[in-house]
Image (cartoon, rainbow, N blue to C red):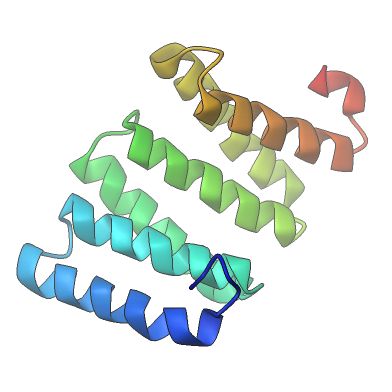
Length: 137
């Protein structure tokens, strides 16, 4: 539904999934944190950045504690939060997050992994927006 742009239909399902996973598995269970990340992603896709940001921040803080700071799911949320901050025009903060994601993905997954390539692209994009295209090379 989300990929088809049917946000109004998708949101209640994402909320129900989040509530269900939190109540049955616990608020810090990796599946509940994934559901939180998914709802935040829906908000991001809708341009609801002020709703997406706190959810991504909450998910990130919990994932760092539960999964560790270098777990791929944690770093994916780092990248997602960076995308929100970039969209809000908070480019230096987005740059820091994209650098963190790229560093961890390169070390843990390798330079050719799709997540690493996505992080490199995100960093290049924000550097270009900051007028630092040469740094992106």
